Image (cartoon, rainbow, N blue to C red):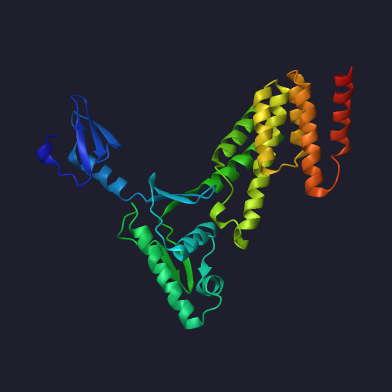
Length: 310
């Protein structure tokens, strides 16, 4: 096929070698490949048309500071705080349209109806501009208003780190129940790798984020605990220690982790550190709850103390 027989749209080009024609986007990414012998222009045009109509892809990251990516490129979120809050809310509730009345009552509770509606319209305009300035195709409206309710346009392919986290956790639990332990642990490790920080940390004191933040933190601690138990059972003591300290970063009174650390230090021949770990456990539980450690933790400490004295 000669170059003059095919005109490609802006953003595409053909990379030629003696045997293969590679269709690429302007960023170098591969769209398709064709035999250099006998390829017809219609096949290349059809491939371009198919890729041009692929729905845009957005990815939302809720763990740690909120981020949006479009086809892997960061989306500038601007400085419009209300628009950003509405975007987060639409993403979280994307299977259920959000009413105008709810947004007005929530975000502008002290305004009269007329002013609240004007403020909402202004924020939605800012949100549409934010998405329009992103790498998304700018010709579409990505925030829809239908019968007094807003929702994100269904033409967007949307993924979130929270959805992936939940999928890995649920699959890990299923595999663990089926006694497929190595596969389950691999799922837990994938989920933990997504946990870059607490859920929407910049909205730490917002009521609508608190329950979800607690749910995800508990799942994270549960998976770390399961991994730690596996690590100590297989002699991976340093991995167990790291997992336990990650748990204690989230919950300093987590006694299972304190006890596992004590056992790891004993197995490493560091009985003094094991005893210090108990004293730290005793201190933080006393400060938090005004109580001593549990009988199980106390019994482990007494056993270590007797061995230390001997």
